[in-house]
Image (cartoon, rainbow over all chains, first blue to last red; front, side, top):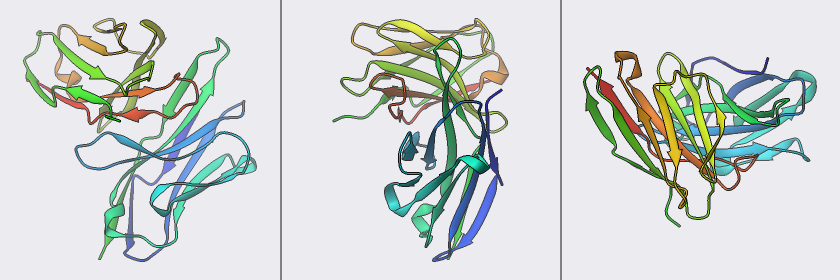
Length: 116
Length: 113
């Protein structure tokens, strides 16, 4: 079975502090990994994605994530939090199953609060 | 380029009624997916349409159905509404629906009373 686990449904950081949002996946085949952000009353917006190649992926708004196959992780980081980063963040993994269908599985989300 | 447009933004219905939600994808995108988002269950995949054909389906009852038109616009229908259907319904489009990123609309918030 494939799944995505986001550790911590709520994370609080001070403005200027490091942001670390954790994501682990389970998959028997190489996955494609995504991070999305959702601001209040809006849909999801793509932050970054990993398909193949370089394992450190840079996204928008200063975020980056590193694919670590040995740890089955794809944690999202940002060196210095801004107030505008307060939102909900979703990790997602797309896996092709044996029928050839591409299924996208989302984690349950992590709500990031930035404290002034 | 215009983003994904979902209408209406808000809906209030009563149990037993049916509802139709609409989604206009980004121009040129051929894949449209629908998701249900609730506080308890998170984001759950409903179905995906590509070139007017349902290509992928999640684990929802038959009360949930959809279709896609030749211009790639999509509609989702829920019949015999239940209180548990109250949720934010998100539509997302992508070029081909494989590993191309999803572009989400702002959603339709459905409240069933």
